Length: 188
Image 1: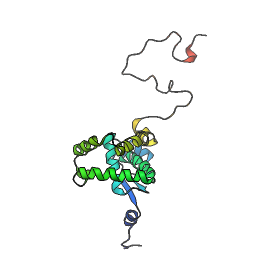
Image 2: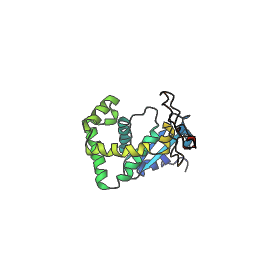
Image 3: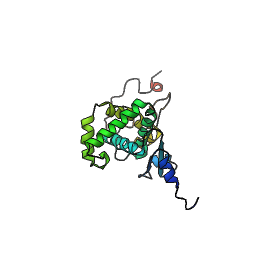
Image 4: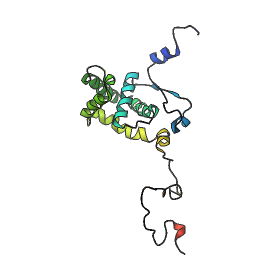
């Protein structure tokens, strides 16, 4: 459909919320997991604007300057799923509307310090706690965050004893126990 006024972007915009972005740190560990530098996340319940506010809000609550927006977008996706419940959807809509009202129109247009001040004043509110509570899990319990923070995942039965558990070079070595550190070091 070359020359059609109905482009893919218009279709995506008209078909509901879409959150889009680009990976900024294209050479980092997250880029190795991503199929491309650009990412898009369709939202089933939330609008694109609500997704943008929730993403920015999560960045303020859990600031990691080098963490890609794509990881923060996982929080938005989780909240979008929860917003299928009309009570959650209403709580999100009312919370974002309140932020915009307090900002004099558009919370996203404020400076980062102004946005933070308005968020800080709402700490403890049901809306704030919904986002914070979801973000604790959604933000940190995924492969993209693991790659960014260097967590190698569950080690299984052997544990970390032979996988860098003792590589702390910034602490003094503790006294060695008589039986050694590992089971095979016990004199027998």
